[in-house]
Image 1: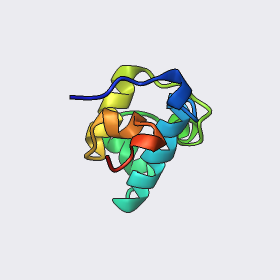
Image 2: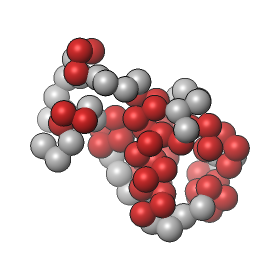
Image 3: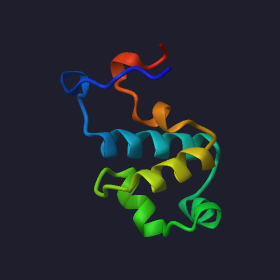
Image 4: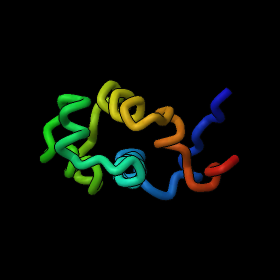
Length: 85
């Protein structure tokens, strides 16, 4: 069962953390932003904004992206203190 997020534990805004992890995972999979667009329908320009922490994607969009790269949304949003736990 997921743990509760406590605001004092969050060192980066969720959207920024999500973007960093999305970009890392996309590159691990050898996907370009164009290929991720083909799989999700989310424009490459907007994907760039997400990956660079300049966009605030909706929860539905985050779920779709996480599933597309084979991760759970919780893994994309988990605070650094809980990574690998």
